[in-house]
Image 1 (cartoon, rainbow, N blue to C red):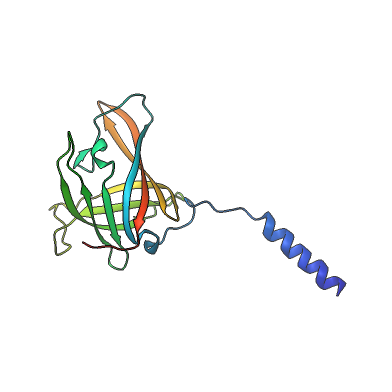
Image 2 (tube, rainbow, N blue to C red):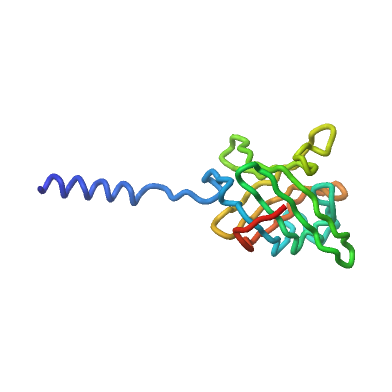
Length: 168
């Protein structure tokens, strides 16, 4: 009995000393994105100031604030919608998305623009990748690397899950 108690204590001690894995180290699952999300915050990192940074060859970064993103995990389809604003045109575009692992312990969100049949719109089959800084529960933080006037910086998008429901 004493040996069993001693052995149990060692197991408990070793398991409590193990490193805790952060969300950026854990491989994200497609199911974790299932549903409708909204970009609730945008900030710049790397260079001081505000920039007119075009994201995803679609619109200025400011236009993505309050944009709605829909992710369907079983087939990787989705869409995002940008609302019309002072300097933003209304946009609704379909995407095909997945996760990419570059091999450095991080994970990236990647997508391509597609038509209603999920066929790539770009004839060269190009797409976009953004680093996932965090994906926990109802919050995802994505880092989009960009350059404006030769200055490199990151645009940080904070997504908040609105609903488990989705519709394209």
